Image (cartoon, rainbow, N blue to C red; front, side, top):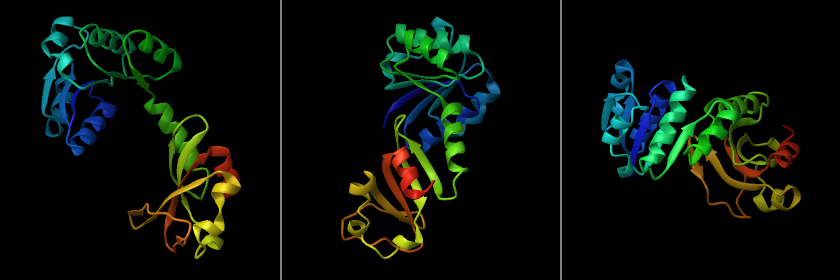
Length: 215
């Protein structure tokens, strides 16, 4: 369990709060708007209404005591930048900030952010890849060249063993798991048979996966 300071409770911040609650982390939520704070109360340990660019207010939160500070402000970049900088100045151990563009990310990283996330950019990439191919059910980008894909299994593969397919040597793609009705089988061996009515999770170079599965 980690203690998290979450600043900015718009749609993105609210979804973060809900997921952190699901993962049983302790969350202090902050926003300048009362209605946003009220909306996340069922999901957080504590919440306060306040201006995150106000040094006195932020200092009163005891930012040094949190394992992680997330700046999820998306509608005011100036506030996001000032908040990020202030958190670091006051001793926050790790600050993750939201960015909409590369130029925002550069400023945030120079002014206190340890890491930057691009929710719109990442979701846009996921949507474009997920819905332009019939085989893809899910997609997680690991870097600019590698990803994990959840894919439908080609009919001609069903009943064959992982060793017979040999896609690791042929295409440098690793079969990580088979998934059936929401349950994951990650005990994959060369003798494992490809099951019916399932999907598969594979890890590899995106171009290799596209070529192998004709995506």
